[in-house]
Image (cartoon, rainbow, N blue to C red; front, side, top):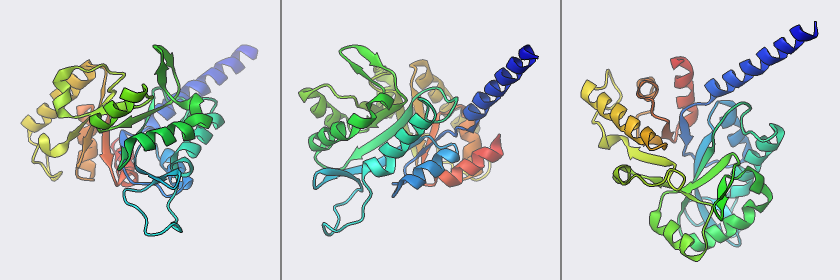
Length: 265
């Protein structure tokens, strides 16, 4: 009886892990969230990776790409819209953002202005959430679940010149042949238009499909992930992402795309 019970528990655990891994969609949501509910809704739809515009305003980090008109603005803080709800998931699920999901969650931040000031404030605001952050200190790994990245190499160099940061870098097409360390640059982002003129209607030309597939293989050989940006938001593109084995599509319409990936399974 006891043996049967243990087998059932084990089977349920395996099923939950398998479900979690399958439920994670190959998406990066680039829509700026306005509150924690939007992030939790995204996680519920299998969207675990995010991009947000961040600005330092009056001593806090806010999710916005432009300065508000007055001090009475209602902009969400980065902590309220992203850091706290992610940490809430991390604690609730005993060290996992999504139960059974292995690997890091990416949070890509666009520093609109004042990169040094933004990073200094980010380091302060991250302190209560340090245990969920993936980073290295003096060559020692701190394996968390959240990796924070930026896209601007000049900004990152400026930040690191003062003090080594916990930030990673998003690379682009020109970085693929440089074979930069995958910890420093865990993600390569490529504009869809650099690879094909296909607009998502009908079948993608075979030579363009092979170009994408070969590029994905090249990036994966460097132990990096690849994200395609500026793609059409439809089911044929979802099918392309799955068949080419690209890791992500970066989309303003991530919730809509999540539905197409659900259908594509």
